[in-house]
Image 1 (cartoon, rainbow, N blue to C red):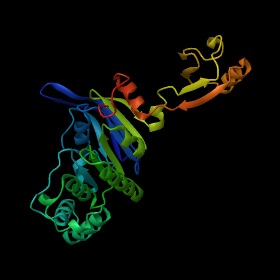
Image 2: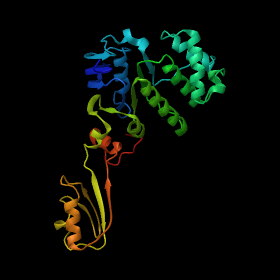
Image 3: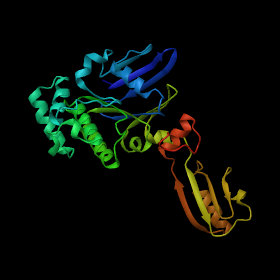
Image 4: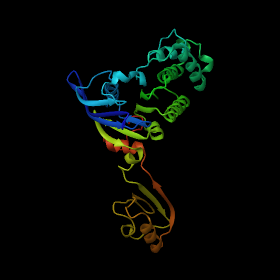
Length: 305
């Protein structure tokens, strides 16, 4: 199996409006892939088409080697964006029940449920009813129920939404552990920090279309690396010392890192006797790359992106 998840040219319209307009992606087995996009970009609709919850109007998709996604549903764990648990059921029983829907024996689901709850710091709440748990606790229970049957593919739709920073860290640890087990993980998010820390590959969607597909580093490389220098004294003619397109004045300047590197620039600065007080290389962040790829204003906030 070359790809755990693959799609080509997925299209979906609702009431005459094209929500997904030719999305393509490929996720390698055993990797973590992030589907990034603004709210309303088409991420959830894309995930639902991949899983077979809804059918595309056009395009093709394969899930775990099958072009009939529902036929491999027992090998998939899915956390939808809309959370939902039976409020009067205990945490342990809820996990066992959702595992049973994927073919896991009830007794094994209970045993694994207790173990998972303990590992997530919820062991003392195993017999607590969902309605007594905080929102963050209940969200973790639903995540544990998503992975209790040890699926080959885990699909998470905005899994970090509503979680505090501590529980976001717990979720990141769970995702890494599942990848180490051999699972393939596909998750959607509009928060760049999680994708930057977790993902082996990215798919960036805007207005229902794939705008980028590749690694985090490849996304960063869509923007130039910047260099900032602070000189000891003001140069007589900075144009003769610095690359074209530099910005700044007096003794502080910024410019794109040239293909030939920094050595020729440093040599010119030293020969000119202006001295060098500070120099640092500014690598583009994933947020910067996302804003550029999607076409948002340069000062777009990270959360909006």
